[in-house]
Image (cartoon, rainbow, N blue to C red; front, side):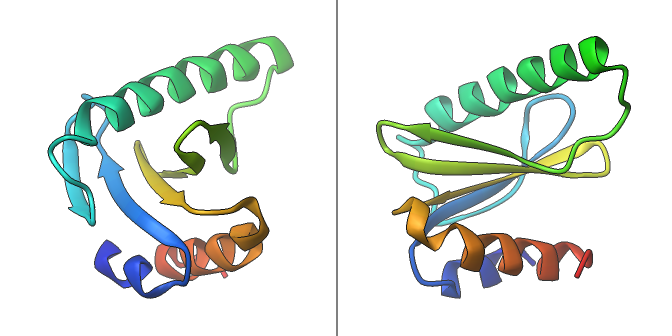
Length: 106
């Protein structure tokens, strides 16, 4: 399923992370990258939880993090989070469209 995101120009790797913090599916992600990316997802979930609580809103659409290794898009999918790392913020529109198409929200 998520392997199709690797066909999008600029996508470096992607992973679907379950609510327990474990990888459900991945593509292009090396074992070396794994700990850092899981830390990003955990931190992103904490930020989102705090914002949801403070803004009194139950839903979120996505979170873009621009980190040293390049931009990372976190997108909810049920109780899982899809992480998509890509090479340049200029590719954000293309990546967002591909993620939404994959998750069936387009």
